[in-house]
Length: 455
Ligand SMILES: Cc1cc2nc3c(=O)[nH]c(=O)nc-3n(C[C@H](O)[C@H](O)[C@H](O)COP(=O)(O)OP(=O)(O)OC[C@H]3O[C@@H](n4cnc5c(N)ncnc54)[C@H](O)[C@@H]3O)c2cc1C
Image (cartoon, rainbow, N blue to C red):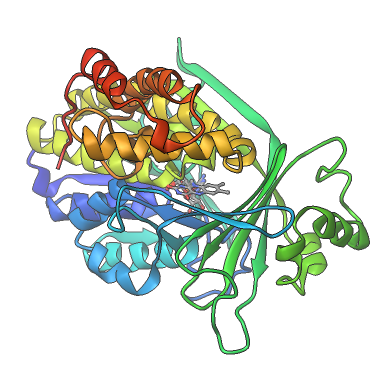
């Protein structure tokens, strides 16, 4: 069928949904989106989960394809590295990349959502708010929708449905009824809570603006990402249960004492801490893997609906946006043969989304536990020096994931080899000046073939 007249129905106008809608509209598809939430441009909604996101190269590439990256410049704050805060308020800065062009970008989820929804409508996508998908008939391929204001349910005959409805996807719930549908979900024992550091008296940031601030404390961690209005969006990560957990920190005074003990320099900047802490919900973090992602060229899972990951590599939506660009490339190649496109999409993507899911869990330990460790910092410095010397072969795993569009599975596999090389080079030295360059060259040339870096 000619794509110009074909209707695609998306479920979810969060982040991956409206971005995909724009890319589909650019190819002439008729696109409509059903979103369970109210239109926040018309209805005031509570701040709720308005955590900040770090957008990096994969996300930027997709936003550029949608013609949106230039527009984002007014709402992002570049972060050049991690600023670690010790218990005694000593600061250690560790750059993310090899130079100042390698930054990640802090953006408010709510602002990003708004920009995407506006742009999707400008491109001609029809977004229906307050419409919750409550079912999908696997035989007739019809959607069951519920109007959240009137509670009336109705049925829609849908051609092609793409589920962009996040980690609790309604379409995936229906697909669980399929024969031989594989599904796994793994929750972390830690949860998260959003907190705020307000702007200073003159609207200025009260901490270094262009950094992601981390208070690593072994089993727990606080992070802060800058906003354009001088505030910082903070996230506190704690175990759900046990000592120093969300369960044990329920009284306002206890929360203050806990911060005084663990994060004293942050506490000084958080006058509303106790109210903030008690008012905001505690969120859970989950890794979801499933397969197949599609059925009969009629329905496809995309973004968190197909592969929710924990947030510690800052890749969830970068990966969801990359899904959109890969899907569109395949559509261009297969000319709307949906069955072929969907199965090729899963074949190409799943190995990569599984890899970033595993790397994100690994990074949890790195962020909360290791970033303050002097041996870890030494390795990070050596990594950047090796990259400078051998740019075609040695690119740190963090950089392959964050500053390049190297497939995640390749970054994962090369990261394992690079870790072994780093162990051999760093375990016996205390300072970067002691690095054995001859050995480095031998190991790198032997174990790391040249790396192809997609533009
Ligand atoms: C604490 C935390 C920090 C994070 N930090 C980062 C980061 O720094 N960088 C990064 O790249 N990623 C980050 N992520 C991950 C990122 O938030 C997700 O990957 C991203 O939001 C997924 O986008 P999505 O569009 O697939 O799903 P969502 O953003 O969840 O959007 C789904 C949409 O579908 C709607 N919906 C749900 N069910 C239905 C239904 N039945 N019917 C109709 N509509 C429905 C929802 O209302 C929502 O609007 C973070 C996540 C968390 C929890």
